Length: 225
Picture 1 (cartoon, helix red, strand yellow):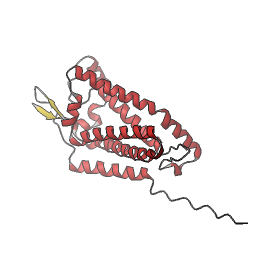
Picture 2: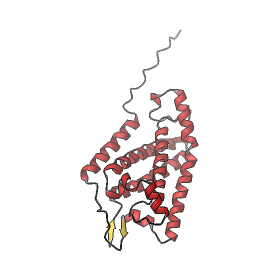
Picture 3: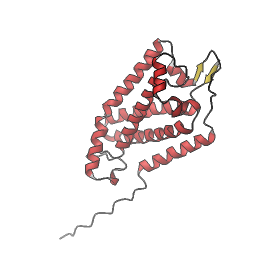
Picture 4: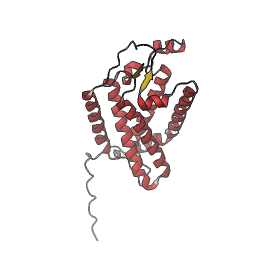
């Protein structure tokens, strides 16, 4: 029998996040006028992560963080070969939280970053130059970690594929094949939960965009004499 483990909102989040992170990495490498798109991809990543945070609380059964958080008992079961759950195993859970945390750190620091030439993050007007310099340094220095985490993620997919487990396919159609009825009833998040998650995510993007920040007053006119 087959059941849907990964619900549609979670699968859309996964692929949209992959697209936006890739777009952010490509555009920051190109620089110049592409930095406008780098900012847009970064804001999109922040919105997606906000959605995932809310969906991890109110979403479907296997989207909820409580379902796969790597507690000591779950890690112990996994190491002893006794893991039987359908969702993320503890090793996969560590990977999920590491990626979400790193992407969130990059997205948030990017809001206050500047290249001191032409690019200024949308919220740089809220902090002074010292904070901008600090967060800009953190934003740039952790970029390489993203490549490391993505590389490890791809390596895990390849290893699981060699072991006969098709992770990419499962994240496309969301189904898993079972030999018996699952012990846990699979529940969907529902329309209300989805609406709440989307509204909060859109609100976060609006806040991060910075359009609500008052424009600085014009500089005083300099006398001609």
